[in-house]
Length: 104
Image (tube, rainbow, N blue to C red; front, top):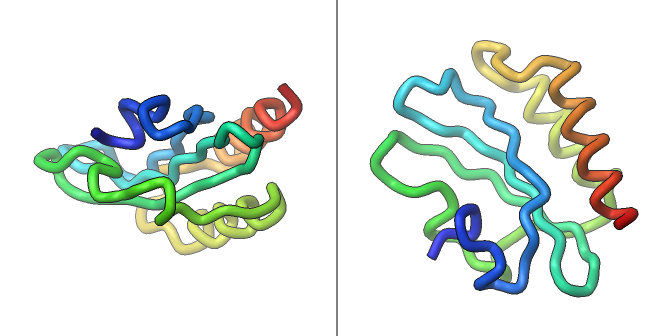
């Protein structure tokens, strides 16, 4: 079961995902979850339309840390993205969503 589509089966709550792809029969996600203890976790996954995103990930394989570390990770992906599909505004909205989820 994919962490993206069934996070509750893994003790996680999905905060959201940011798609760096063109959306044309492909995905290039950074997804963010919060575990039962309120810890922030994230991972990147990409591929064509055949595999399910994050089907090969486990809760133990996820990156984790404070929100500043996630922001650094996303800033790096933003700078390195090919095609510029994620805008600065989308990145900031996503970080606002993450920050608000951590407060809940």
